[in-house]
Length: 239
Image (cartoon, rainbow, N blue to C red):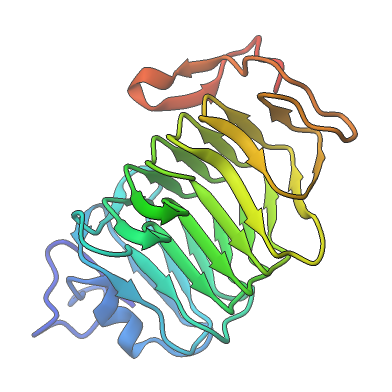
């Protein structure tokens, strides 16, 4: 299934020659193991996945899902597995009580290689909120969101190779989890505070420190965080 700024939800078929204009239109037709490819540009609105494991894939740094300050950008309902993949998107403009960027309920998708920025919650989980979820988050950049950036409740979510920086609020907060939340090879820096809850942290750079094998507490030396470039300098202690 294809989504493009030049597409149409009324006359499009989802074929690459006749794409849809919105992600929601493609999601409505997609079945298990289908792939939804989104082109470059800004796609304004809210999207809710259905009861099928699908792959939603954009162009890194070029595909923007923007809720324009109205609700959650992407809602993932119950029953989905790690075969549901959300990748290569900029998720922004969410405004909700919780999970303004992505809100995951009773599902365990794979969320990878995305950018979450400029989302705001009135409670917690401005970028990400998960409830009853064993989701996998890997290679995501989560920066400059307002209120606690990530909130995990009642789950065993795993975070690997993520950068969580310069958020107004706690970088990652947990509640009511049976086991510690796993964090590996990740950076938490410049947030109001880094972690609040029970965690198993290894080989990560945590401002404020964290117990665990291979952890450090150092300036990660971002290339140009003021302009949104969170790549690491050659002399970064995280390289």
